[in-house]
Image (cartoon, rainbow, N blue to C red; front, top):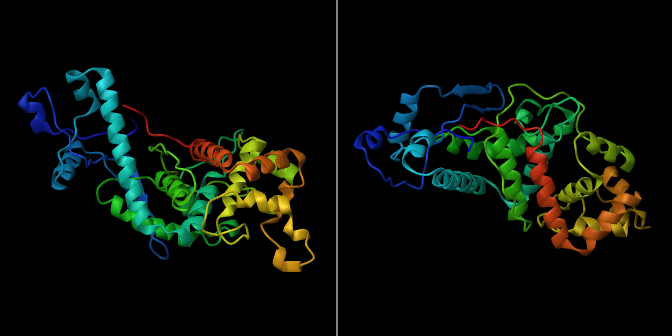
Length: 324
């Protein structure tokens, strides 16, 4: 568990040996940043005082939870772990609910692109980048054109969540991407919470360029710790949006089916141009084609592999809050 919980001191003083927990909890984070676009700066707030945490928990009308240390005094470790696991599940559910309020199928492609552009800066050797919320500082870069709109959508959800608890941008974006996939008919993707936001932008020039050929793409993803199979699976996210791969609001394996057909070679001209140059390059590589063919024939396989690759994408390179 990567979050701290406040202690209801009335419970501790009562000497009670069993406790009843409410379904809503307050989890103070180490810090949180809420970006305000335009002339307003991004501000940071810090929760450091235990008394303020307790007062905020009680003012919200919720019974504060016992800390892990207190719990360990009155119940076995396995029950502590089960309780904390239930807390984490409840927290994830509540965050997803807030995200669903602002998300729609028409907005899903932009939100998923936001995930890739935040997490895609990771480099193994340089130990930089990853899912760290630094995208809030990088919106003016040419490769991030159009992402400000997607971030503003999620800011609506984050502002509501922050009224009760401080949640990092990295968690919100990772979770929103998973919800975008699910909303459009794709696989359900579990997301671990507890990332720490970066306070500075990631270095420039770390995202894969749209003009890369297959060999360069594979080398780029290898530097980020991803195999060719994972590259192809993640590329399947382009099935959403206006790139010409089937229904723009349905997450399915149409991307791979259309790649195999190579409609851009048709005599129909520009109306048959689909995808990015990097998409069309994949189908010219034998190793990539093997996976494209598999996913074109088996959507369930694509869903499973995309789920695993997405989880790796949003976890790799992230900095996590320390467990108690």
